[in-house]
Image (cartoon, rainbow, N blue to C red):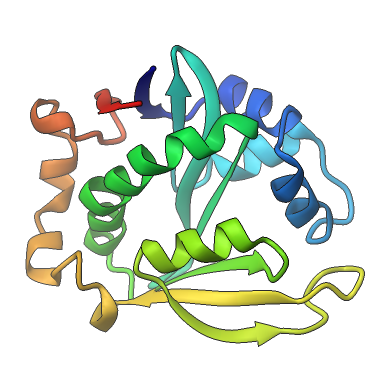
Length: 189
């Protein structure tokens, strides 16, 4: 299987959102009163947004968006085949997305996961996020979420001195870096 990380498009994110795996659908359903695949895709296109493709088919969307100066929100969701993309997304997160966000002056990046979504909780821990607290009643039907974050001080994989030049590195099409312009990344599938 060939895995590529590419800049997100409305079409690819809409396809992924229309074919969400049950865990991601449950997590999105309890955070939004009303949503559609197109609306979710449009919202996801804010900030840095990427798609993981398996054999040319979009299977996962992920990225980070600035909420206010210095505060970013990281997100990801996908189809049933997303699990096969996780190793490549993880590598891309450490090599490109984390440095991009740090270079934009992030002090804090947050991610929330439904407490019942064990896969998401394990993945956030592997990505180096710190579990901060439980959020009882965060979901619209009272569901509990867990808040994770990365702070500038806790970014062990993104030293800020290196992150300052990350914008230039992220646009380098050699070494599988990807910037807003859209280089391709390859990872074994």
